Amino acid sequence: NIPDFDSLPPVEDMPQGCAWGIFDQDGKKDRLGCLNLLTPKVVQEAFKEARDGVSISLNWPIGALNKPAFGRKGLEHRVLSFRDAGIWSFDDEVHFNTQCSSQWDSLVHYAHQPTGLNYNGVEPSIDQLVQGFGQVDVDKALPTLNHWHDRGGMVGRGVLLDYRAYAEAKGIQYDCFEAHAISVQDLEEVAKHQGTTFKFGDILIVRTGYTEVLGAASADEQDRLFATNRNVGVTGNKETARWVWNHHFAAVAGDSITFEVMPPTVEEDNNRVGTAADLVLHQYFLSLFGLSIGELWDLKALGDHCKKVGRYEFLLTSVPLNVPGGVGSPPNALAIF
Ligand code: UVW
Image 1 (cartoon, rainbow, N blue to C red):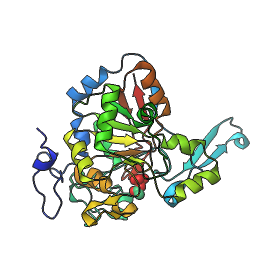
Image 2 (image 1 turned 45 degrees about the vertical axis):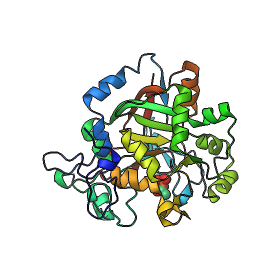
Image 3 (image 1 turned 120 degrees about the vertical axis):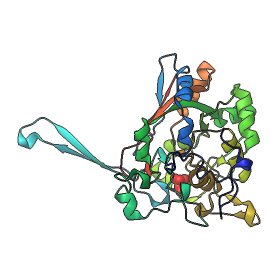
Image 4 (image 1 turned 90 degrees about the horizontal axis):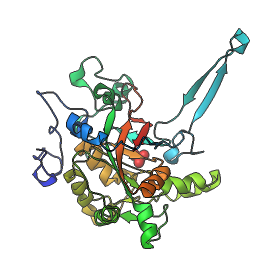
């Protein structure tokens, strides 16, 4: 009994479609958002998709990009040897921005821009995030990724909408580094083409081919592609937000860098061409719905396998890093058939 987008109870000073309070329980502020839709019954159903004994990793290498976009730090990997101490052993150290490759955006990654408020009205400071605020007093906990561990990570039914394969089949040509928008109607057409239907609590995954183009490019070419600040993605508007909420997805993910098309069009502001500060779906999904967004996932092998077996539904598991106050994380995601 989750209300539809237009029936969500109004939240003062926030636009329609604000789901704050919907998942609160016993007077306690929720911090998991739409992950709450993955009830034991929904998960039991999802297990029915794992019957072939095949699993596919959806994680791009953390160091896949020589110089990640938005000035993010790429992977630094240091290997330590203990041979000088007479032990044949290695350790290693890694340092990276959690958004430099395949990632989850937590519910504190990107706020509702006009107010600066994140999911359920929180407005964390850098210090609170660094300290993993609320670890002790759980009532004060922020909606960060470490809390996925409190519920055993994410396990649910993944559904791939392979827009890349659909476009190829239909002769639709597009450039992943242009603002090619995938509308709600397109998503429905892809689902129809694949014979896919959705269930309550599904994790929606959209393949565009973006990481495949980037992965095949030289370091210089990657820099040139990022400099366009343009990418293929799902149309960022209220209609998409309404469609996503009304399907009751537990999370969404894709292979492009922002999931939604860049640059965004700000319909409320005379169709102004926006910037990364105007991402419409980031605001609805992360800060208003409590719906995590996965980006830069490696979906090539998944797309190929789905096509081969003629099935686009699978068991999906994902466990982010257990970093107190974690804002983003590699997804450690597997599709299991
Ligand atoms: C931004 O928030 C701009 O980046 P991302 O798409 O990685 O979430």
